[in-house]
Image (cartoon, rainbow, N blue to C red; front, side, top):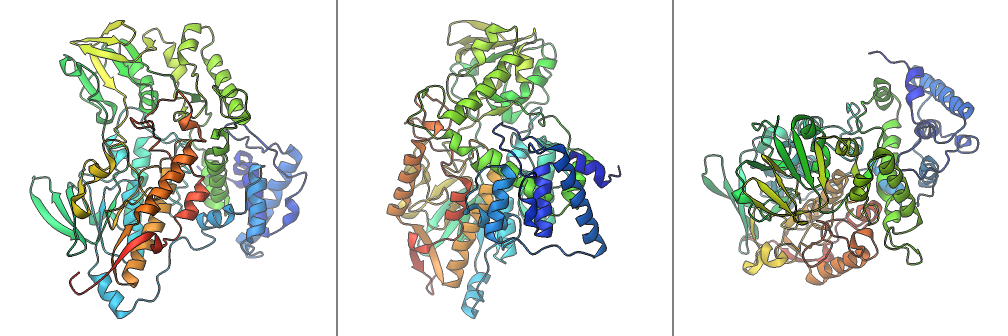
Length: 638
């Protein structure tokens, strides 16, 4: 379909067009009334920015002229804005104050400044070290692919092993019906590999998986990945200052290898939680976890139980209810559900045209998503000690979100007062990961769907007994019960210095790491998407992976250039960082009294979400300071 710019501009975000106009021309006269966007505190942005239609049209017309002049060679694109102007532009784009500290991060994300670290000129000794240096990456999901690309760009040798037969990680494995992102996918992508042609604003699994594969192919790492290869164990060898790695191929044969550095891309959500229900082994029908979907099981005419009401249940319910004769959902506690006009909406060709043809449009559009779903949202999750309604919300803005979400719930469930009482949470918004509505409320009103506001007590044959004593006969059980996130890296037997295992250090569910990446007594071992790096309120774990790989490559290049054989984070540095994490969490919604979610471990500690703003994490991971580490110099034996 051919698109002209008039059509495209009618579909455009006006604040985004305005930023493009200023950046292309350097003309600051546009950064004043009547062109200034108005503040919008709703969950989803108004594309007009609250700007009067006449001023919108002036912006469209001026930008059309500028693009024509650039295309004809009459005009050159203005020099990149300085940090002062860029900060002003960010603030005006989202109509609220954005601190100057965001300018370096966003300018780097937009490619206006250098993204990756730069090598010093290597000496002959350093070159020899590099030739004998290997990094093992575990896992070929987004994090592992990011690691391979970043190392490859720097010329650092790597091997990547993944137990699966294909690239994709969690997006390969989780193939349940309607699996997809609940973060806008124009933000759920690499800054160095933008995708201008996402088919939807919230794309489904196959499109996300294809994007992951296409990035691996584009950067020429796909063919060098060892698939069908499981990392069984990694053991630190003090003499060689390397990790001894045991790998198993698809035939079950074991082999040993050595790596100077190990990077885990395994993440938090790779071990389905399914063994905690008493009597589940007695069930006589089909029982499977949402992450291990049984496509061979026909749900037509079946009585189906869905246990759990989290993200996967939100996505599968609509399809399951359309196939099964009866669906019973067992809910321990309700979830906040947010509306989105974009969730099922295709991206129009006009919008794709804007992404591809208007310089900086994609970058500023992405910044708007970053702010609205990331750092701009985080203050609403912080406790205001003077706020009088501590039980229901964290502060006045959080209470406004609660009101908006409640109004949406009531509108969707009008005439179903029984469902309202079951589905309205009594905790603040974002206390659990907020869900995007996949016709959840609408499906709950179907005649063949029942919501039981109680967890499961036990299973006896084909009968499920709820905690409230009621029972249901079912033919199929679907466990939408999440993952054993607290048992990070449990799929690999990791043994560090002095025989210390990772399970010794972390126990069953208390993972801790310095900056979410590295732990004392496990030198040269780094985790991607590790403890306290989850983005529970919004944002993108891909952003986290890029930050973490910037830090890890900073460590590795310093090791190579300075002839260092190992770096082991100092215990006092590690402990001080984690105390700061815990202290910060005490002020945030995930520690709200009475909250029970998978973000907390059995002792009540919040181990999964990151408490920091993204700009804080970007800053603290930008450059590694080796004074935080116990450093061992290379010698002739290692």
